[in-house]
Length: 78
Image (cartoon, rainbow, N blue to C red; front, side, top):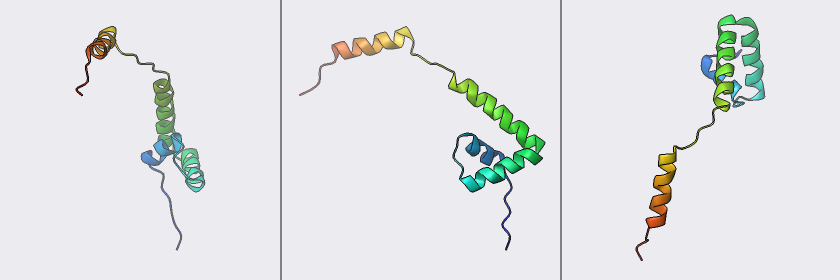
């Protein structure tokens, strides 16, 4: 029996995050060569991932102040 593998968008996302096996990598890479729609999906996802990796989040001053205030006033029950 011959096993066939059809790359899906889910496979492409797993590939992008290095969650595929070496054998799956071969199938996904072949699919990207021959399926322009899948390649465009991959490129869009790679661009989004790159942008998300650059996002830096920090808490607001109000949140930090509330946490610090709570910790200063906290009295554990013994």
